[in-house]
Amino acid sequence: MQTTIRSAATFHGVGLHTGERVRMTVRPASANYGIWFRRTDVIGKNAMVPAMWDAVTPSRLCTVVENAVGVSVSTVEHIMAALSGCGVHNALIEINGPEVPILDGSAQPFVAAILGRGLRDLDVPVRCFEILETVEVREGEAVARLEPARALEIDFAIDFDDRAIGQQRKVLSMANGAFVRELSDCRTFCRQSDVDAMRASGLALGGTYDNAVVVEGDHILSPGGFRRDDEAVRHKMLDALGDLALAGAPILGRYTGNRAGHAMTNRLLRALFARPEAFRMTECDAARRRILPGAGVRQTDIPAVA
Image: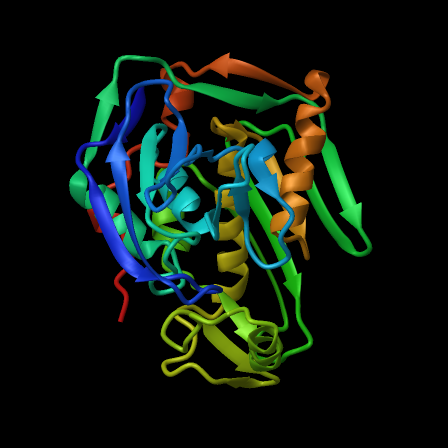
């Protein structure tokens, strides 16, 4: 069955890049509604923005969705990962500004609120995209790929010159609540030199050591350091799940990302949907529902955060 959140969950915070204070509320929605954003601060034109792959507009630093009249919402990847990882298929997200609040830089606060409210089953079957043929996009050494697999799997590799991060790779199946247990608490990260350059360009205005792990060379500048030794690659996997959720339905397939980012994952979805022979939409039977992200997840699966 499809699901929605049982009651509304509200979040207050700042946008990572704009630095603007925003209020965001995730509300229940009916079956087959999907995920939509509504800009409550927009008056006089269409304020509804679909959380869909074909609404993504180019952005180097985050994922931005935009409607036909230019109303947009940025940095949607963490809330989308939380919704997908908790098994929420339908929701209306009201927000009074242009950017989703960054909170602590992970998806954990979103996950805790969603599972705290609980989910409501909707008497409509879940439909999934089953990957039938390999689809791949490349850009230099960066690669993003989807290929057939029984459940959604994510295989991600990163390689940074900074010794505090270095080379990391992790492979996880997203079945049985793995996202909540293994990825949801992992925060965004960046170099101090990148932060300085972004701020000089008017970006990262809301970034602090409290909502991102900042490194420089072999030094971790954020107090407390990483929550996990491989938190960096796990966060990239979190981002990938959020970007894949913009497909509009769960994906059954293996995603491989090597030095991939938001833009490349969106290019991969565009390449997939340009090849109808590479996938099919299928109704999930009971066995498939049990391996979807979020199936069977519990509040006790949420990692403790210091």
